[in-house]
Image 1 (cartoon, rainbow, N blue to C red):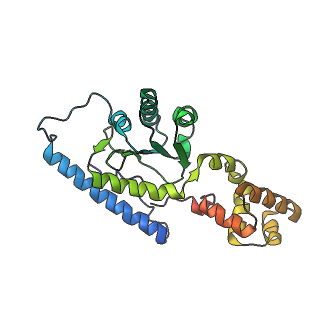
Image 2 (cartoon, rainbow, N blue to C red; image 1 turned 180 degrees about the vertical axis):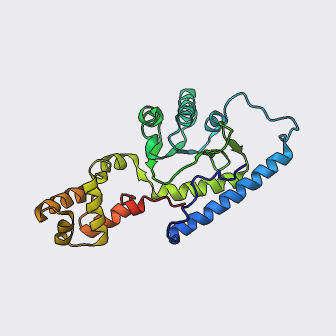
Image 3 (cartoon, rainbow, N blue to C red; image 1 turned 90 degrees about the vertical axis):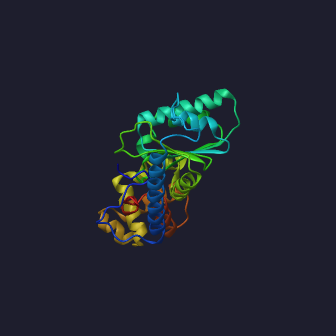
Length: 265
């Protein structure tokens, strides 16, 4: 069975060598793989729980984990409809039960934004935050740094694999946190998704990031200097910055540039 149950997909071998941040993520990915592999091996050797009986559960592990959370629930959403529906069901059930409020963090691929979970359930869930990333995600759900459910696309188990080893769960949360910090808030992503993802917006961002003068950029784009500067002013306003340099830096931080949108791992 494949060992790829981490949050991120592997790097393209043709890409350039990773920088410091990417190297830390690569190291975290390696740690995740080795931890999950060791956990699987241990689970296979046991085959039974601590009482010696076969482990059986009448409901999905997602419902169990979300229902039993005490502090936080973190999940990655790849856009799979079944996964999103299951998490939505778990959150609604917990809310109706009137249990203790927990922090909910949902890290979404862009294609997951149209799911009923994000559009209809999230606004009704207290203390829930959604961020968006272009980094490829495997499906995972983590609870309190104590347990997790993971499922890679190539795995046959549609319910995912439960990890109840705290060390493995905490390591998975560490990698989640790394990607979370670089992701974009949902409101900000939707605000920027219009103008800045057009061909014109992308080309202007590239010129700003490269530090080209307005005159040079306008000439390369075959537009008037006045038109170019009008678009730059609109983009700066959208990004909430005061200078062209800040606009280029902010665009890179938000992964709005083509080269910054490549997969990290």
